[in-house]
Every structure is written in C-alpha cells, then in structure tokens.
Length: 248
Image (cartoon, rainbow, N blue to C red):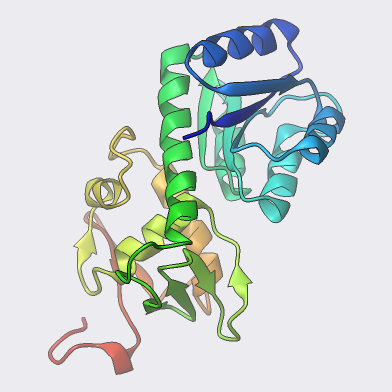
C-alpha cells in the first residue's frame, strides 16, 4: 500500500515543520502550506488522502475551507481548533469534517486520529469496488433516501448522490442494519469502528443531526432516526418495511 498523503494547512511555520518531520518519520507523505490560497494550489497539483486543517488561518478561515473541501473532494478532514473553542469544533463537524483535535495536542494522539480517519476513507474506497458478490448491489432504504452499500453512497429519491462523510455513511449503515433497535452511543461507536472515541463524546450527536438533515422530511421532527431519551437512538423504517409485529 502506498504511503497516505497528508496535507497540513497551518499558518505557523514551526508547526508545519514539526508535523512534516513527525508524520514523515511515521511513513506519511506530507505536504504543508500556510493558507487557503496555498491549499487550493496544492490541490491542483494533486488531491491528498487527508487534510489536517487549522481553523485559525489568515484570510479564508479553516471552517470555510472545510466546506470547500467537502463540497468538491472525497478526502478525510481533521480540524485543528483552540483548546477551549467548542463552537469551532461543532461548526467544523457540521461543515463535514471527519474529526477534530485541539491545540496544544500530543503528536501521538494526532497520529491515532489520522489513522482512524484514513482507515474509514480507504474502507469507503475499497467498498466502492468490491471483489466479491457480498454486498454487491445491496441497497437499504433509510428515511427518504437509499444506502448503496457496495458503492458506499447515499442516494435521494431520484437516485442522485447525497454527499456524506465516511463516518456519516457508517452511522447510516449501522442504523439501517439494526432497525427498531435502540443503539446507545457506545454501541454506535462499536458498529462504526470508532472505539478511540469516548462513548459520551457529543460529536456523535452532531453527526446524527447532520444525517437527519439529509434523510428526514422534517429534521426538527425526525421520524426515521429517533432519539430515545436516556438510551440512545433508534432507526424506524417506513411502515411498509416494518416486520410483522415490529414498530413502536
């Protein structure tokens, strides 16, 4: 397997050099730039597997760049935020970031988070071209949309692609494959293979809010992915798809 390509976007030259050396020593192919204009120029030279994106950039900030990336490229995005800035973390996830880490960070924790996001991104690519018949052509209805498991795509009622991150797809698949079951946050982390997260990490709630906006007719009154107070979440398929005796 070729080395994962990581693009670091940070306006601090010392941070760029440290990450270039550290990640490079652990087998990553690293490029590093200082602002949005340099990021766009780097993308023209080649699209990386993952972008490590600082929020506090001069000019166009990291949150705007995260939206730009998610709208145009199938890359992993890890946001770097200030330690006490919860708002930036929430907004970053809402923009489509796969994960975040707060400054100052331990490089070992950063590397663990990069590995997790890269694993999900590569898994999505591998499943898009299955080598066996397992899962080939299998589609699951969820809300007003359909999950194509082989292609790892979310499709709307007209069959058009609805952009989702790797983590969002894994969440939707977990719900679709466990209908009418209450899934705790801990269980969802297990099903999506994100055990390095804490079960009480509220970022999973943010991602569920994001997918609700994509699959629900009225995200403010969700009918497909319902909150079970004090327990977790439950996917309720349309009545026509309910098994005999199923439902609430």
